[in-house]
Image (cartoon, rainbow, N blue to C red; front, side, top):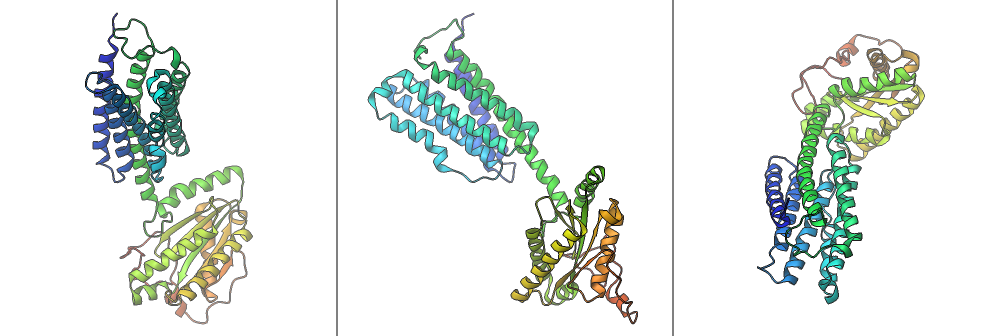
Length: 419
């Protein structure tokens, strides 16, 4: 069967440009438009670059070769930057244009521009380098494995083909060989490019879709003000960690935090002040927690920390560092108006791995901190403080409920009495 490679490349150009338009349109439907916009730009640049290379009768050979390959290399640079953009990495303009700059610089050498094999070796090598770099970026941020792994494989195969093409460059046929009856390099490149362009267009869209889905799931589990996990995050991720440690019989500790005098500050100075205090506490707590630890905002000014692998003494030390650092930060800024934090600590060594029992034990220890004067950490099992002299403390320190209450602002203030 006689196949016209030029006709096949016309199909490749058409599909590439249409895919570029589709990716660019898809970019408009996402909050973060940069990744798909860069991929759309990649397809436009490659498509128009191949089209320019095919215009034998319309442009002088030197202008056609230089312009066409420059556009193609810019397109692959855009694909690399698009892969970086999936994970929020900044645009690297030098990396984006490096391949094209090298190409244009070498084209200043007359003998290079006149030698097909040298041109093919350089362009193929740069394309392979960009393809491998793009594959590495996708692999680095492999949060959406369902889409990224096929993309990495496709990019590596694409790079390998161009490496082989660069090595075999001296044996390539001239570009004006007309009708072909064998599967030579032109035919291989045409079909491989068609599969690659279609495949990567679908993969880029799928990665963006999975990224958006991941962000939605994350937003459902994260408190937007403090960026700590919320109560639902505890029910899903926290309980999962507890079950895992229970199965492995590994220790785990819980710290219950509550900001002292927060309600009065929130009511007196406004919700903006209250929100700032909550954010400040969350930032300080995160500073002293390990990457494996988890901080949850359970509601209002109540926080809980889960420390996998920690003993009750370890957790006590961490809680006291957080308490002390928060106290100093508020004292120096003078914005907290006397807000401090009390904490209670419990561990699986005493109460097992039942979530309710651990939280209840940490709460009881927290109450002791409150009753003993606030701004302190109490460890579960410490001696109980003397009973209050009167019942006035009942109004000041109502029972700490974890079934939630209606909050009227971002910081969770309500009309009920708070500690």
